[in-house]
Image (tube, rainbow, N blue to C red; front, side, top):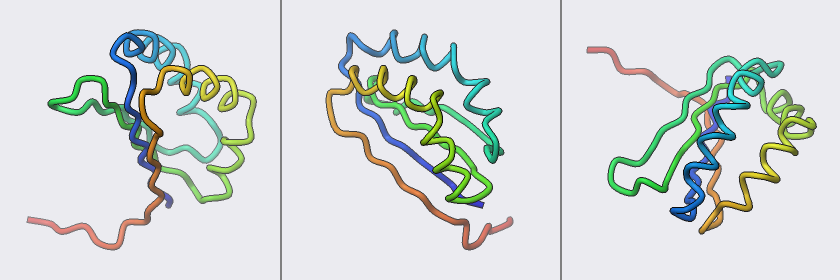
Length: 99
């Protein structure tokens, strides 16, 4: 399982447009082949910073999504709203610590 976190900083005036676009496309993204989980997070203090947290079957499945028309459409719109370059991290869980 690949865990993907993407940190995006938006122009303050672009936040509402981003959220509208995310709402319109979130189910299609979540239902993409290989996507097992999708969350949207907002920074507690910087309200124009959002992160997506997703789980993918494999890096190959993530790359298939990134090559899809859905991704190309969503990302081409989203990147016009950025005030900073996004940061993306792909990770694998090493250990979960129980109580």
